[in-house]
Image (cartoon, rainbow over all chains, first blue to last red; front, side, top):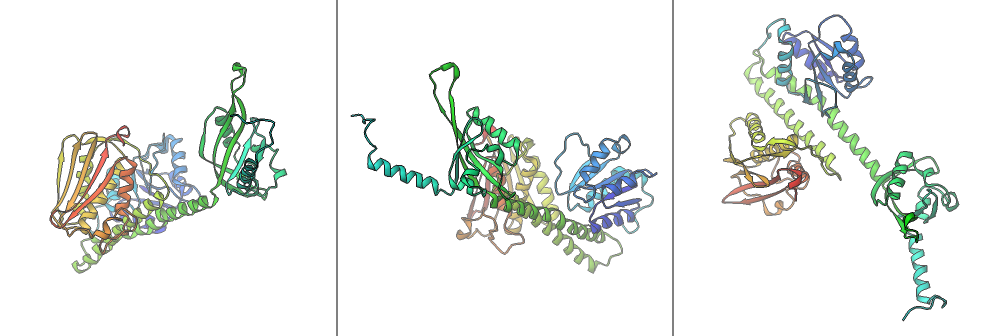
Amino acid sequence: MILVVDDDGDIRETICDILAEEGYTVAAARNGVEALSILGQPGHVCLILLDLMMPVMSGYQLLEERHGNPKLASVPVVVMSAHWDGRRGIDIADFVCKPPKLTSILAYAERYCGEERAQPPSSK
Amino acid sequence: MSANPKAPPAPTFVRSLEHLIDFVDTAAVGLHWVAADGTIVWANPADYESLGYGADEYIGHNITEFHADPNVIADILRRLSAGERLHDYEARLKCKDGSIRHVQITSSVLFEDVEDVEKGRKFVHTRCYTQDITQRKHLELARDRFVGILGHDLRNPLGAISMAAEYLRHAKDIPERHTKNLERIVNSADRMSRMIVDLIEFARALGKQMLVKRQEVDFAEVCRRIIDEVEQAYPGVHLDFDAQGDTRGQWDPDRLAQAVANLVTNAVQHGEPPFQVTVKDAGRDVVLAVSNQGAPIAPEAQGGIFEPFSHTTATQGLGLGLFIVNEIVAAHGGSIDVRTTRDDGTTFTSRWPRSAGEQA
């Protein structure tokens, strides 16, 4: 399952719809708190696509929570933001500048979740 | 001939002293002296009135009472006592009404020699000049909010447009007549995205020296990557590339890529083929030349070509690309110029010192 965490509804739903169309199982969260709730449920999350600037709990805070939790620390995170300041000690799989390119999102999905893809693309 | 110390002061000296006192009392800049223990021993009206205090509420009090940040005034006093001169040191002062003023402090200590060498020099008082920069700080805050809105709030919907259109463009069941419209949406969204990046850079650059994080980079590699991207973004466009000699050095890879991309995109958008990109070893520098064979830039446009919002032709952008290039080159200690003629076309040549130590 790919977890998309972004407070912007348009971008969150667009990414989720495209990934679902491409055969991935997706979950969406509007902030870090909702993301942690999903991560606490049963089910394997193979990738987190994470925005940084969000209300309630930011992406930075979620990364810090993840850093202190061995189970979550193993889940690769791709940060989607205007910039990433490379915070010391916080490990991320990669960073994409917003707005993210479709090709980048699909490439990350394939790299980290390709084996979990349920079906071939429906329209491509 | 020496002056007689018992003689009354000469009238011209007294008048000069009166003028000096008047000058200090009416100065727009805050001036004060602080003793070694932090007591304010003298101040001009601009200094205490800007905070809403009277002379007796200020002079004789400790300077720490008026600073909003105890660690800041502690640092100021420590550094001054050590003989350091502070220049445009930023601090926040507390006004009588509870509001905060942002100031820049320039200060040093007047020391006097004493007879006992063991005791060292005597701290007489600080000589402190305080300039109110509250208005500038508020403008900076507004600018940061503006950059935040551009960076976050505008890019998100644009990202959704771009991704959705890109996805549809490659769908098999979309009629060909509609794919052209989808391409227009994708291209326009990309263009708008680049404009937002330019605006963010412009807003960040206002009044600030751009920061660069140097690391080992091969200039030629960066050029190859950018040329690849630009050729993909502009189908049918070909850029000749030539790398000569050792092109490695220490630059900020992201900034360097941004500068190369802006120069190459500028050539493709405003010039005519053939397009040539050359990067070559020039000893302490690496030199990048980006040329095209289009019509020369009008003489009246050449002077301000690196200024923000300069438009040399009917353009697709905001006229910030070359301004940003100039800022990036300057932040690396380099230089850039343009040569444009009817016979030879237009060439932007930039020099990039290989390391901070090589900067002029």
